[in-house]
Image (tube, rainbow, N blue to C red; front, side, top):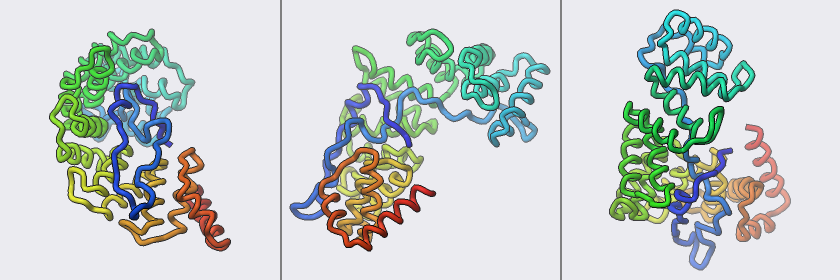
Length: 331
């Protein structure tokens, strides 16, 4: 399950969205939020290793890495380095293997050494990864200024993750620069980073660094949600349900809630449970409602209204819920 371990600066922006009640006088779509902002993407998150620059079909090292044959990937990468000691992309593969302990003993210092070698040869992924290592003190001394400098170098080479992290750093300072953060998030999003799109959507919603614009917020939130950013899936679903910045669409909201719930987001589990219980956006189905409620409750998201409905089920319906939960966990 994806945990939300974010900095205070971005948590401050992630305010609970207001929602209409599901039934007149009934429970709200937004019950009390859990202690940690649900589903918010962690800042400084390592990006997936991108395709090796200028790699052709014969790139055995990268192909092996992608398919999980890490010993082969390491061996083939080392062959490439033996042939060309300027092959930064191959060095980055070696660094990734050491960083994650993939087929070798995990060694963060060795990973940082290989990232440094690759970064010195202009590999932007290695530059970014070395920035993360400096930011978090993984294999190298913790050094925020050095991390920022490395992110800037990677961003200048078009690395979307570096642009996103620079945006986070712009609002993680004593003097927050939301305007700069918005520009960086936009550039990151346009380069394919869904966390940048989500963060820009939040800024538009709050009117920080950009004029408050729910239409723009909904558009960027949708982009992030369609790229499977779980936080965006939840928040865009709420916007659809309420018609905030977008045409009201309860069926669409249910689809996004269900997708995020299937990604094990507890808030989405709670929301889709409420929709199934009320028959809003989906056909009323108490077994599905209670399945999602039980799953959300196991990770700490309580809901007294749904508890009351669960307690009122007949014995055979409770058994059906238990079976549905077991089948879901088994998937």
